[in-house]
Amino acid sequence: MLKNIRIVLVNTSHPGNIGAAARAMKNMGLSDLCLVEPRKFPHRDADARAAGATDVLENAQVVDNLDQALSDCQLVVGASARSRTIPWPIVNPRELAAIVEPLSEDVRVAVLFGREDRGLTNDELQRCHHHVHIPVNEEFSSLNIAAAVQVITYELRMSKVLGADEARPQWGTEWDVELADNGELERLFDHLEETLTDVEFLDPEKPRNLMPRLRRLFLRALPDKIEVNILRGMLTAIQKCNRR
Image 1 (cartoon, rainbow, N blue to C red):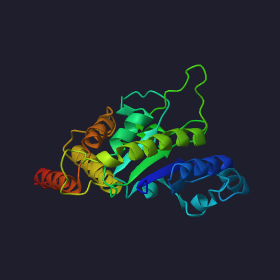
Image 2 (image 1 turned 90 degrees about the vertical axis):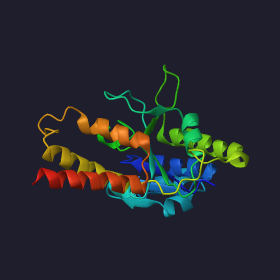
Image 3 (image 1 turned 135 degrees about the horizontal axis):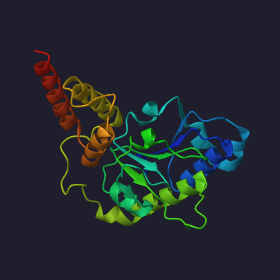
């Protein structure tokens, strides 16, 4: 039921947190765990804290960078507890579940969790379509990674359980093309930045937050594969005209 949800832990320091996150995932029926440069893994502390979810650990992907973790994902969400200089679409876990529930099971969703001491970087959060914030008690806001995974995966599960008999397409109709995955979007953003630099709209010395704002625009739109190809074709045509 939740086979298309990937939990991504970035640079986790304590292996016990990885094990506890795996246990939280299995409690809610998730099994796709990806670890980006974990400090210590595999490790006996991870096995101990998994408490019966060692199969999730054994099948976890361990990758060197975020590109590898997200390349086949069409919707990326980053867990964030901080406000940002550039506002980004932000949801609570229940709102996130409402966004994910109507998606086809072919749409792979990644939920990112950052480092224990400082969370996700701004660059990592700019890879996301949405940020998810857990509205905890402001007087004691520190939340363990595994607890955050438990809260978010619980809401994802409950949304699927309650909405199972009311499944509906995201845009009110079956879409004709798959959504673009993260790898395709990153290539679009690279192409866009290159083109805007070529036509002197973007000054690399004074970028003015242009690319983060354009990222936010395109990620809000959830473009499909054909739309991304059209945009890249337009950029190529612009580059050809500019070089004549």
